[in-house]
Image (cartoon, rainbow, N blue to C red; front, side, top):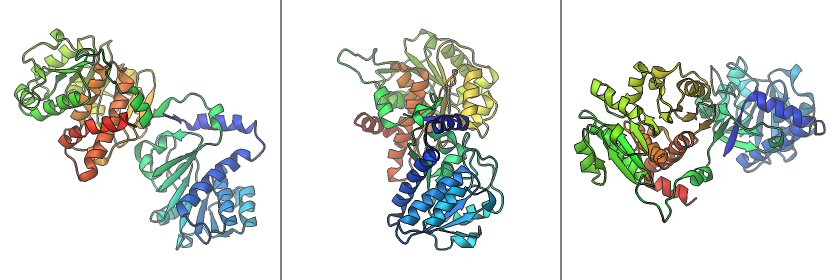
Length: 471
């Protein structure tokens, strides 16, 4: 599990570490890590043409020192200084001693370059790039580009991209991840993120947000033991689907089964479709959710918003077990705010989010956290990088998935999967985070042979779980 820290936390940690180290040691570590990654991308360093886009301050200094290391290995390195009077003096001197040179900060200087190193603006930057930096970013868009710490023009704390920005193939970031590299528009600009250890762990505070990795998910996945039975493995109740949208009930129910639930009880209004698809499901037409023995409920997908649906939702929310609310359930909550003490998971996309909270803004982690706090529920904000937030401020940013998951019914699969994890006993926050991760892997598996349907994603849930369990 990798921690995600704010710019303020990173700055404070760097200052504390620099107080213990010789002058320039921290920048030397960063520059060396950057140079190693640049060399990896180039393959052959000798004779390669490298252009450094250099702004003011330490970010440009990292690029200059890394450029000096590449120049000493035979690369032809040129620096484009956007503010020559404020360029890092020691870094520039090192580059010139190594045989690098300074050229005008003009887009034409990038012609024929093998690698561009973006050191225009660091993690403290804000707002869109201004000319001529914007022109250089545009010229570099078709070239192999490495960003130093964060692509210039990306807000490191939020991932917001308010205007012109660098589009990197690889971002080499130092010490810890920043939210702007893994969520929002910034994640798309960052490309592959490479984390370089510069010794900040000892001075960084505990991370408030995390990115799960496969071993973390494997450790959290429920695995039945020899003494388990269908009840101890978890019983999921599902209220999803309707005469108009029976598929939602089928997908949510099927995902709960494939996700490992010991039993699924179906209490929705698409009973015939669910019974036909899954004879092992206990279909209880007309039963009140309050009277059914389950360890968790999934409610909302495709159930509609009629008065009868509202009554079913109120009955589910009146139970004392964990409840996941999605789709039409979230729409109904917009008019009838959530009030319950038991754990609740809400799984909105952006338009649904706007019905129950303010936003989301370009700060997707902040928006999810605020909604979770105000609603007293775990909020899973769907997106290219799904964010899970808990009422106490903890957050997870999901690294798996594919844009192909943006298909009708995919969210129903996610709902049933998380429901199975809740019923198995995972706390609401980890259940939502693990469910998002597994769902993303299932989407990647399903997309391997072409654009997948939600049924393809459902069929890939078991292979996804198996691949994670096997490591």
